[in-house]
Amino acid sequence: MSGCDTQEVRVVADGRGPTLQQLGEFPMIDRLVMGRRQPTGVTVGPGDDAAVVGAPDGRVVITTDMLVEGRHFLLNWSAPRDVGRKAIAQNAADVESMGARPTAFVVGFGAPPDTAVAQVQELSDGMWQEAGGLGAGIVGGDLVSSPQWVVSVTALGDLAGRQPVLRSGARAGSVIAVAGELGRSAAGFLVWHNEIDGFDEVRQRHLVPRPPYGQGAIAAEAGAQAMTDVSDGLLADLGHVAEASGVAMNLIGDALRPDVEAVAAAADATGADPWSLVLSGGEDHALVGCFPAAVPPGWRVIGTVSDGAAGVSVDGRTWNGPAGWQSFD
Image (cartoon, rainbow, N blue to C red; front, side, top):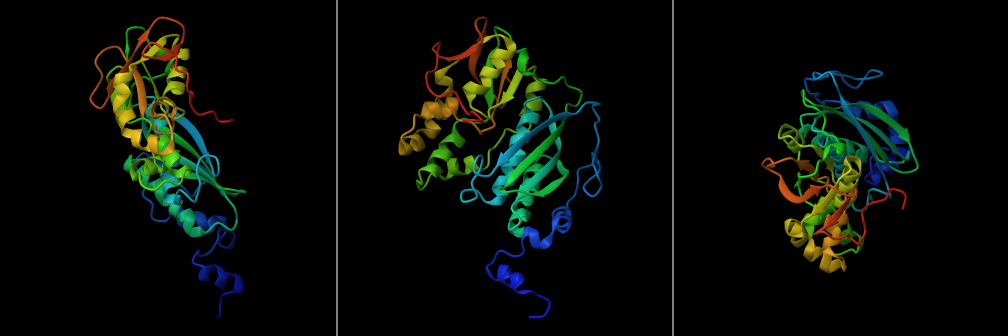
């Protein structure tokens, strides 16, 4: 077979196609950026030593987050496209929680040399799918060898003249509201982990979160005092807001009941407490914020803010269950 060595024949024959080691770093990067269209705010995209992105507001919101194989995702659960979408979504949610709109992403990716090129292409396609839906682009990054997959994303965002919504702005007398849904990712994790069939909705929600895109800016326009996304768990993330603001927060159980009912069947099948999934389960990337008065469309009130020791209670009582995700547990 002229033009092919025996190794190339083997990897093509097993259905995986060429690997990163066989193709090489720069040809792989060329494949990943070929045919991609950047949004209008990107002056210089991939191909130079750095990108150039417009900042019409004069300020840029910046955040970064990582996904590590075996810790944050498993490739026997997630397709590479799912991993790509999740990596973009979780960073976009952080930008949204500041009251900004995501505009651009920079991606660092590490993988073993024998990783199939087709898998990396699928990962990139997932990223572009999620970013494109936001009107944003992937403007650059890096590709390196690593013992396992590591996806590091830096996101940029535009405040469009608004002040950033910080964790420290909540005040007594305000209401707590959420945009998005709670407990779905945690329920999906348990279904996957226990190898239980069915529950397709929560299974997919664990693989690819659905942040309420656009609601961050809407909340900021409506006068949100403080905001965060639910990445580590509702109690844990609101706890950061309570601590930063120096206020007490009380969640209303009845207001959370629709979420509890939505995950109840999956909780029952896995022997879990549905309240724990809603209060402590992370990675839904819903937005939770504090408002001085009425909340905008797309948000629902789930609690109140008062003077007192910083912390979060549920129906006036301390929650004795798990508090949420800990990175080094």
